[in-house]
Image (cartoon, rainbow, N blue to C red; front, side):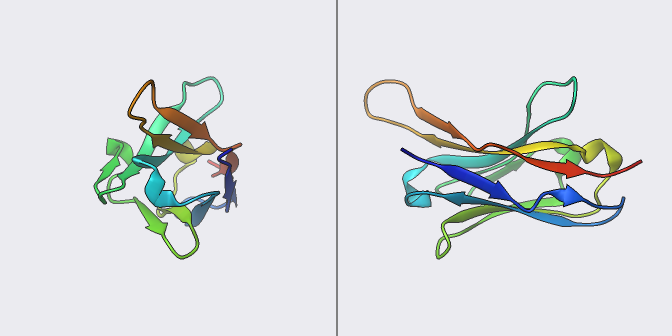
Length: 120
């Protein structure tokens, strides 16, 4: 069973930085897409950034230029560097992985989430 374990969340002042890390059990190259989502209180979960096995990245408009998604194949982690943090970035951040199968629906995995708080 695949496990995703996030770390790196915490309290940071506006304008500060945090680096989230998602440790993946199994090879990260077995996943077609890996990414980060977030969910703020009272809001729907939304995509923050994603990374394909081919190295293509995708960011939500509000995160472009501030956040960077990357992978570390040696450590088997997917990371999210967050700079210039704002109060509206406050949310629980979730690691997300998709692995397509030849037959049937894709396998989808979620981490347990890590809290990021940026006071206003």
